Length: 338
Image 1: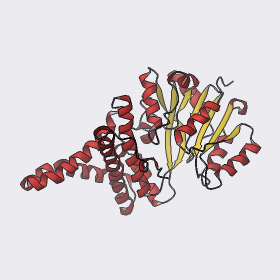
Image 2 (image 1 turned 90 degrees about the vertical axis):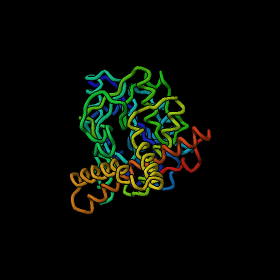
Image 3 (image 1 turned 180 degrees about the horizontal axis):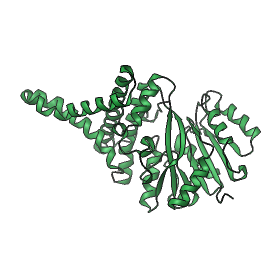
Image 4 (image 1 turned 60 degrees about the horizontal axis):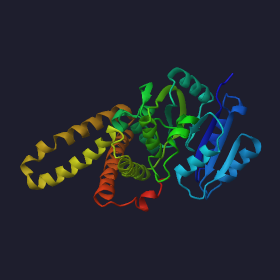
């Protein structure tokens, strides 16, 4: 018999296209319903999201709808977590679907690892050519570094996971998600979890589908915000939370320095450009191996630029705003990219 009870918390806003797929996958879970709670926290959707969720609530007593007038993701997460009465709380995105054995695999992972949080691998679902290119770039180590939950190449203790399952005592001890953060609230929470001496385990048997965004413009905005808000988190904690966050930043600084340097020392432009040429060639090689057809290979290569330079530029602007000018996050930076 299952030893733990689970809550699933889903922040959502204007997700009528996806929310039913997710809730159907939750209803189909191979786990006792009397040990499950589901909280969809709706941020005043302008579409039929809340109406669709309410229909599920009327048919399935373990599914609940909570309204969040603040429309901020960490507030929605905290509202769902505080409403939970279970041993474990799972965070899910509205663009996801989970496998029927999802919670059973979480149970196994807790037993094997004795960790305080467990998570799994994201299997990308592509809705068109653009989303396929974005998804393949984000599943590449060249694209996202050692974010193992995206690349699926590792099982063991990690520094973060997507859609983590957290034991109740984690929240009792380190608190809840930081409501000041529009972005990076999960990374920041996981940083505090590790800093408290607790552990996060990534299991390759815990899997979920994720519908990849299909707009280069929105992807740029998303990663720019990731970089920008990461600096805000660093300043709060007076620490660099992960080393990999610095790589895109140094790429942007190097590129800007290269542009300025060629104006002063034009005869040395080729020498100074060698690292950039190496980056371009490596990105091209990875795109060729990951893509199918010339168009997709080119889009994957372009996506690498968006991931790296979007994040790096956001990080640079964040340093300027938060450290040099001592500003608070701008209102523009709080606008989500969906």
